[in-house]
Length: 126
Image (cartoon, rainbow, N blue to C red; front, top):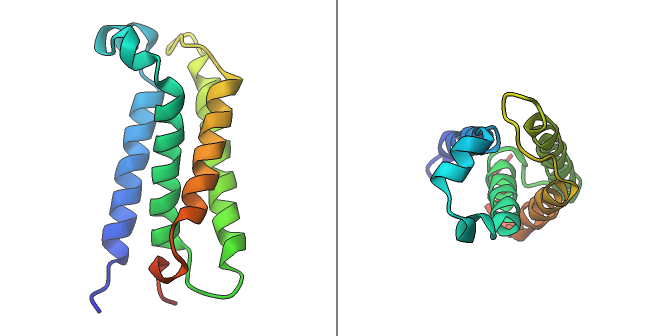
């Protein structure tokens, strides 16, 4: 079977950069780019983004081994921490967006779902 590790890692880091860019957009840019109808689905976007990040992180970095669920949990918690940090950064004057506990919780739920949605066989081989 062909090695897919570099592709999985590349996909994860690409999506991570997208998440950073979207999370740190200034308030004026968000209002200019996204109509209120799209912004109303903000909670779903948070959950979906962190679920996708967790799926890619687990596929790229979690080996297929006994106890893999622990590593999946670590991935989910690390992404939840990242989401919380980004929420705090949104309160800075440069970004000037709301720092929302609700968004951080949606990030966490998405990361937990994403970390455990992949079948065991899709984790990378040792």
